[in-house]
Length: 258
Image (cartoon, rainbow, N blue to C red; front, side, top):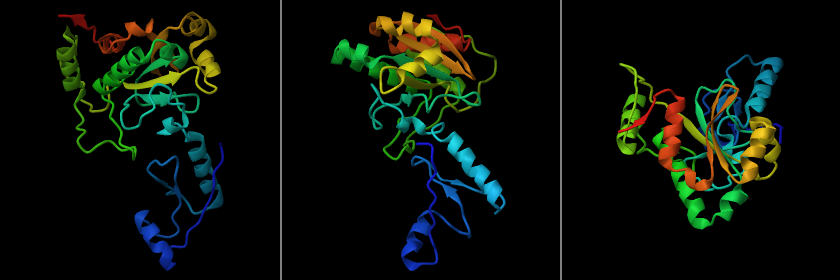
């Protein structure tokens, strides 16, 4: 998996010109990295072996950290057309340098499925609703946000959440003004593929034993390298309101019922 394939195309050849035009090649030579269908990354350094090699190694190191959810087991969230929740796993998980705060649902798919289609469907619906409420986008099949998606200022989004879920928030006199998500929402299927050990390492053996081994789910917050528990319980405990409340408490907005 951790390899780079290198190819070359001669844009002066007639049959290749349309491809080069589609890739917006305007100068030669141009070196681009194509990783998992994401927007191409263009090398802008010196045309020397060592700088180019170091750039390629950096691309390889970061592979899977941006848009790499397609490398993860989707588990409960298996539709790119319907799911806003981002599948996470050992090869695609918030890193120390992540600019976003994350809410992450850890679960065993077998335990969710054992509750029946209705219960698992309600969890999926609630998690997707929370992901969108916090600022996530429903992705199209191309991986791009739909044109109709209009970012909201965080302060306006928080006010909308307070109105929707009928609670009061403690907010600063001004801000927050950014339009990025309040939190990104991801999910790790701990019994999918080889992710059990990753969950053990990420949450700690005792946490996994106490929570996941009992058939419970765990909602956590990730910031830098720290993982903080927000909510734990059985599937019926995880409504959209309870998850939003847990997330906003973690962010110190102190939500209280009206």
